[in-house]
Amino acid sequence: MATFTYVAKDRSGSEVTGLLSGGNIDDIVSQLHGDGFAVLHVAEDLGSAKTKSWLKRFSEISFGKVPNREIALFSRQLATVIDSGIPLVKGLKGLSGDGGNKMLKKAVEDLSVRLARGESLSDAMAENPNAFNAMYLSMIRAGERAGTLDKIVEQLAVYLEKVDDIQNKVKAALSYPLFVMSFATLGTLFLLLKIVPTFAGIYADLGQELPGLTRTVMSISNAIGDNILVSLGVLGALVLGFIMVSRTDGGHYAIDYMKLKMPIFGPIIRKTIMSRFARTFGILMGSGLPLLESLDLVKGAADNAVVTRAIDNVKDSVTAGRGVTESFRATGVFPEMTLQLMATGEEAGELDTMLVKSSDFFDREVESTIQGISSLIEPVMIVFVGGMIGFIVVAMFLPIFGMGDAMMQGATGM
Image 1: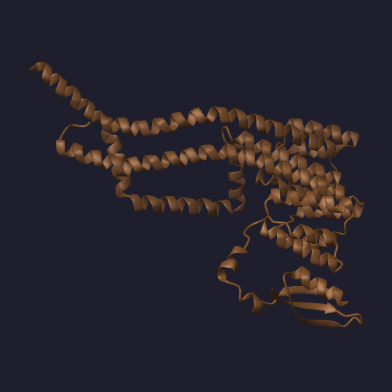
Image 2: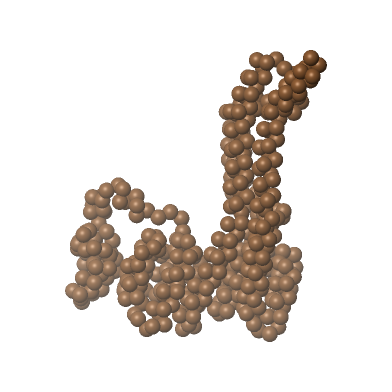
């Protein structure tokens, strides 16, 4: 049990404050409603909170934002609650009792409290930005205005599931080569800093003339070993410089531009961005939001400075009176297939439908590209790692091979 402070109004309209004990905020709200109070605010008493152990408080901390898959699951559950006719406050209390992400659980608890106070669902969600972003919030508001909240929430669930699925596939495709490259780097450093110096000491005692390849590898090993602190300092400075540059507008734009132009993985990143852009823009337009508001919101879904700047240009062009497809084509950023579907949708009055079809196309393209790269990249990585480590091993064993040949020649001469 914990102690909570509350602010409420009694039947005469007078504001009262006090302390109550209960298991959670919902228990306190229920108690106050049962006593005939209109709840204005409930929060855990700070003095009581201090009695918690530091370990328990740490376990309750949530970092970052709620993952898409968690919001997608919540959206499906919320759509079921709305469609079944269960009062939202009661339904949200049930959802807040489910396990899962702690940040989302707290957000849902807060939603139920705010709805019980008479706030709208969108206003309550606006107070929990770590769980519900601007795009989600705008669509909920559109659903409330149009009376289609259940359909909007269902669309959001499908959208978030699609986005999460594609993101996971892209991460899986990128994580394998990253892991292999990290392993190769660590393995190479181990050979250069531990194994090579051992061989160098042996060869120094023998006084044998070493092949050029062996001397080169030993020179690299000495350079790294003698300047390890300087090397780490330079590496740290480069990382820090990269982070600082990436936080500037120009640097962020340049990095995002290079992502799109990367060999092998650039096309995957571009198609993923286009899929996310088209699906988000289509859903926003289909929900009844104004075009300019939809363009503002879709920038966040693109998550790329190059595409964001292009959308800003589109917004300016549309504001000046040009057509939607014409404005997008003028940027030179969006693929022709998407532009053709947009043109067809714009003429037929089904822009949202055509955009979603474009997104489906890019989803299939991403999956196909990932499968192709996955089948190709494994043997390439094996050859790369084997070649890098094998180069060092061969270089260090060359003198031994030379000694063997000399001994055989000497035996033959005798």
